[in-house]
Length: 325
Image (cartoon, rainbow, N blue to C red; front, side, top):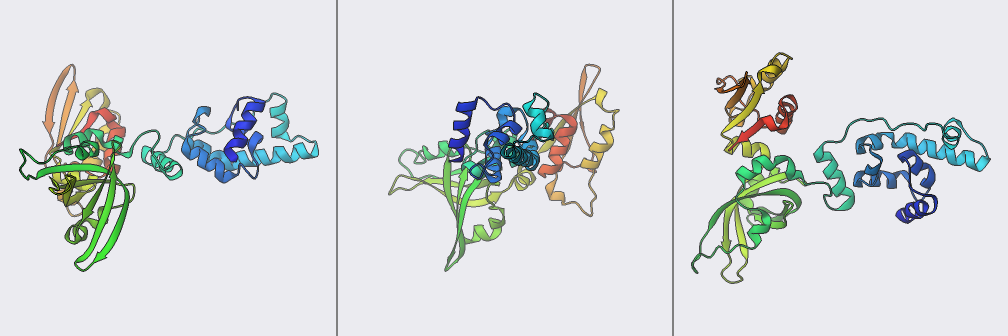
């Protein structure tokens, strides 16, 4: 009903010129603040050229403006906002606050739409996952693991976000069914009690999960099945498989405080650091048309948590920071 009301208003009175204009024209019990929040998360108002975060932060003020506008119309009056807008003046501007992180934007989309619309959470890790995984979930479903008619097992590493999971109690302990989504397809997995006991804490809704195991073909049904052996989140995968962190640094950028900030991110305090969570650091240093590769000493180790890696990419540029596996 709310969407129908918005469409009907647009068809009768013309295109909405701004977010405030839309709120003034359709705000009602049917198009409530909660409905507007849902539409913001779904990206329905991206056409206004404002970030979703900005629209969400401004929404309370926009609703107040719309409520006042409707009260004034009912009383035959016009307030400062209503009068200015009606007379061709400027309406309040939505402040630009920047966008939500990709993860927050996509999580919000899935929460209201049941699907990712403008990307996939794995997109952020494409550079790394291309080096880590052996197959996409879509290709696994169409595989034939019976080589020359003989039963065989294939070692694989798969990845996806956790779309759903269910924990069951059995005589041998807890086991978990979980479904992954990698943007190409979905696949359900079963982790038995020993695997669940060791890695169950990594199975979190909408979080990235990597699965190590063995694929085989059920000789009776011909369907593909997988024995789950090890689970990783991205931090665990980096700790286990990353060989080095490679950064590209241009000499022209080293005089603006870059070096101290990098040093803070890379130099770990031995008594606080988990040394198993770090890998060696290499720098492609570019100066006067020449590039030299440097390996930093053992006092400098590459962090493997998303937060620190994101900070490094902000400092150097996304294309200048690569984990190699």
